[in-house]
Image (cartoon, rainbow, N blue to C red; front, side, top):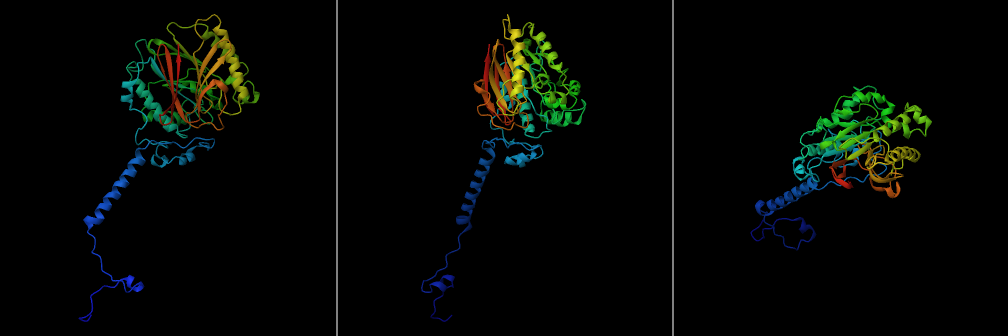
Length: 423
């Protein structure tokens, strides 16, 4: 550089416009330029993470194709949360509890009910098809009910149970069990429900479903407690003061009488249905002292909102049950039963059936313990259907002397619907 030349650094800009003077800008200070930008970027990233992990989870809409695979595990890929909890194969997040109060908090707000009944059905799939999610909801609700002011422990002074699970059948898929100690009793029942805190002294008042007949149905009669199924039909008093009588029946013999092939495949003889109804007539002929509510529990529905091609069987079961109930209603002060709880349809439903000679009968379908039904539900069941949802869930029923409050909870514990039955 000669003494008369001006000091100037070379810039690529000079190659394009050499007449434009160039001056090198000062290097920016880290604290004045880079650090504030970094702070803003980290703040935005934290805000995005906070929103992602704390926003209410919106489940993927259920349709005829979800979940519908044989084992349902593939369907968990539909949920963006599935990868976070692979060890439990959950369908929904359990990082935070958005929609439910903790058991202790809920118990402080819960009214003093005589009993809480938790209805679940069609569940036994080794934890698949959101069964693990249902187990968590069931355990939370059972613990909450146990902690309520009226339910201190699981037996009142009269010895009646205060919290119970109404198990509506199809307990072990796909083909029942051969013996009471079959591996699936552990993998589909004990490991799924009791490993997440479900109290082991809450009885499972259980009925048989058609899948249970594919195996040895009688094997379920001797599964150890809290499983409760002394036979295909039995009764159980519940609630403070014993105000509830649960009547468990076996609906498969009647449901499949219209199809001789199915009846033979399930090993149901022609006299099985007659024995069933003769027993029920005898039970309904007398009403034990102190009973305010009678709840009938079976597997198959008498009102169906799911198109599974069994309209003839549903109508046949309803006709047979109507005959028994109408006979018991003659000259009686109280209705023969106040509610019918069942499953088989893999959905949740509430209907009010108009039973000839009896009057309205509330029908609670809780058959969404794992895989849900395929097929449409819109418009099926007619005006008797008040609510139907094809989503995994259970039904919680809080009972006192004057009403039953039935609340339908999905696999995240979100309450979808409430029905109140009053005396």
